[in-house]
Amino acid sequence: MREDAKLSVARNVRREETLAEKRLWEQLRNRNLAGFKFVRQAPVGPYIADFLCRERNLIIEVDGATHSTEAELISDRCRTLALESMGCRLIRVQNEEVMLGLDQVLALILKALNQHE
Image (cartoon, rainbow, N blue to C red):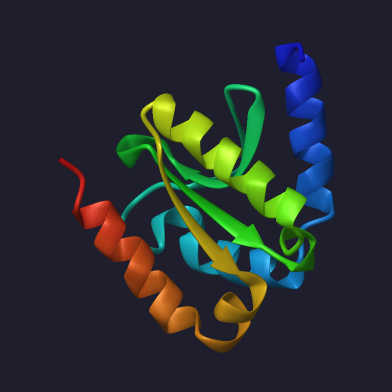
């Protein structure tokens, strides 16, 4: 996929974000989490990351119900391996975790950000 096409897809996904993604973005945007800069729906290789901290090569993926079948789980594992092979670290959280335990999700993200070597 061409770079301009990826950016167009990313823009469209931003407009259709889930409630959990909106809620997490409010906590990550404008360097709200310990001064780390995040971007949302960022192209990374052939993929679009939900949230990316470029400074730490950390990707946060917020997964919903569409990540529950065996085929989808295999696809997610392949995507994770591909992103890790590009030097990224990846955290996957479920929509419910964001909605019901946002403080724990933020603590997990902050721990990963601080474990950067």
